Image (cartoon, rainbow, N blue to C red; front, side, top):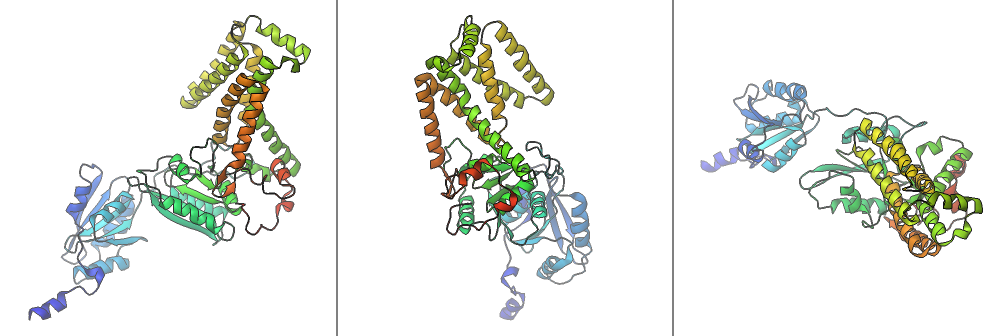
Length: 492
């Protein structure tokens, strides 16, 4: 008789095996959390009582009430607790996403992601329904990457909004999205985008493998991902492209790159990153080829001026004054007659003051930052020149180098250039033009030796094809850019 009763009461499937989930266990995991909310709800016409839990603020209260609580209280189902669970999971609750869990940790993880948990203590099982709150920053125009002829939308802190923005630009089923969770405590959702047929399969697999191998506490900044994905994390120059514009993100995917978006970060990462690509902007494709080529060439010239102008002035003024035209040399000598500091001290001091001024303008609120910039650039600079503390030529050289650095589209590249600007100035101080040229050769060797996920950092300048250098310095007409991809090449 006991065997017959055991046969009829035994679970009919592995899913109906009692689990270890309980309301008390989930509440214990969220002990001390004031936003943890719990209430008991009677399920329809049955005598079963379910415990509904959620985190206030992460869940939309109207959506939880209409899509979870109301259908749960009006459920027309009878039978055992397993039959009621199956009825709820089969559509008794109006939510597009539902998951069944049999342990407290899985339910707590879904609660932290903005779900509503319905727990049946009798079965040791719970169901989680997605009801995330939609509160967040709306899509607005880009604030860092200014756009004139491009799209006016920018990434926000919500991952699903960002994925929607990307798919609006690429409405192709070949656009693949692979998602994982990074961070032991933050549990940040990270999505990898690539275009099947355009991106190399080994590149995609390498990015996925590096993301899965990440073992960090949390993802709160781009560096938490980028520095673990880079081939040379100690390198100063950025090895990934950053963008807040979905149109540029989509364009890079069309070129065969792999994109990464993380929940909570309004900036996308594009791999592999190359130096020539960092000097291009999306508006180059919207302009005439000659106009765009002139702007690209201007950025390369500005890159060299920002990098080498202070070092060149130090080398020429201290070691090779015969290279300066006579009238200019007379003007420099007159301006430095009453200045107590040498040329190297002036340039290095002005470079340091320029960095301090820039950092102060960034960290302070906008009205105060503008005031500090005006005071530092006009009042303090003019007063220092009139007081014969620094020479006017030093102010002009440092100002020109700073203005040339601001033409770089990539902020990370500009930061690397500013650091190498100091190093080249020190090389010029030590050995004059020989030291400057040695520093430039060392920098060029470093750039040519770098790789980003198997792609040369100076690509396509070093791919060995005819006209590759011209493609770096100029932008050819768009109809001439289409060409078959090289088989087995190392291009992105």
